[in-house]
Length: 480
Image (cartoon, rainbow, N blue to C red; front, side, top):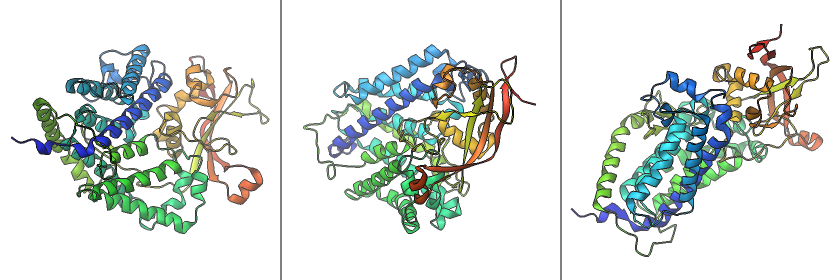
């Protein structure tokens, strides 16, 4: 059997760039876990892992934490993933034997899989599955000094196609504003976590907003098919996607979703667009070729349901059909919020509530709060609590499991929880009463901003948590 078709030296540079970029995103993901897990998932967190693994069996959520859990062990797992990711970013295994490359790339995938599968609400986003699916395929690219295996390159294109085309279809099947090209009249203002340029994007002329939507439809519904065309067409299609994703990076915070999409698109660039070639890339051994072909067959079989989902009128968004997130469905913003609501948590240290009680506001790191504070850029770093606060403002069903415990943690001045916030108005001391109010937020007009310096205008419209305090048993109780 002749194997000349199996590798393509023209993709050596794109393979190397892809591996470095993916390893960097792994590193970010593990650092997010290190910094936030105790408050969100730890033994005394808002949604404790021990409680989860006690009721959900291993077969439904494969994870090393089914074997053993402690906060120290989670920290070891997360830090181990960060260290291995840093090793890959630095290229310390570039010239390692093929089997070493397989093992080293498999480690962050196994470790992050273990975190995602017990992460519950905090790890329910599409970019988690995307990182795992992409990371699984990266295991079989081999070391940097080896020529790129063509079957794996095609599988990466298949991921990118489903990611973009699925997102395009969910929009066309979803909110009418995607079809009449008006969704971006609202999206920059109502997206989960605006960035420092979102105010400016929101105030672009409406005809330009329609151009933005048309460009999105073209990139997601037409361009993906060119990925499977001969070069340089496939590379040009990937560049179009990269430009579109950079536009999204500039206009908001979407964790590492955009950066990972760019990473996938880089894998489609060959020497026409990345004119760097390895002096003499090594050819893979026979056993490795057989493994790659077996993995390719597995992915093709598992692709049946995600492919069927693409053409289904009942298309699922960001869904995994297998427990290991090997082949998934993707999509975002099938519907667009026309108004922005935010939950603002306030507390007081006064001994009794009166009409003159002074309430002080907790400030979050990323989500809108103080109208005079400019939105910040955090992506690809992911502020999980801030993101879920946006969902909580849409419906209580998104937060009923964790928002009351969060109130309890704040009333108890829990130091681990307070680290997730930007500002604690009580400086580590316990408040006596807490409430959470629902506000309607909108961006200021240019005239309002010139006059007041504020980025937002807000008005109270209701309550998410009525005045509450800690009871004798440490639970949150409403004030009568």
